Length: 122
Image 1 (cartoon, rainbow, N blue to C red):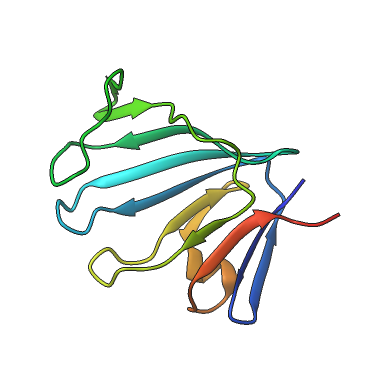
Image 2 (cartoon, rainbow, N blue to C red; image 1 turned 90 degrees about the vertical axis):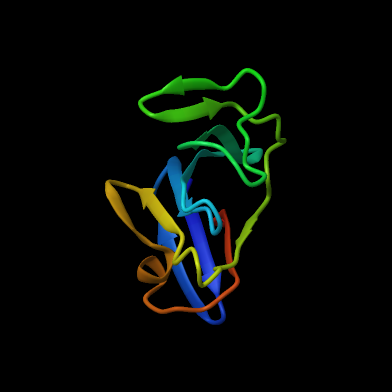
């Protein structure tokens, strides 16, 4: 299976069974990460991590502090797509997959939004 990214006529196909999305919280300027898996049922969120708390971003009950991040497994069903929009205060989303980490715009070869992530057809 592969992960497909698309935005306003731009597209990228990434041969990966897992990926990490990361960004900076716009108010607290704190790092967030989500670890996703590409599965037959859709995109599965295996773990969320936040480096700190505050301003509506408190880790949920049961989160564990490890390596400076609060980590937990969200109760979220498999998603058919993820739609990303940028906030100027946060900068570009970062996507790590297939041994490479880069801004979503770099993966697409240009800046456009919103960016949709989904499993590639076929």
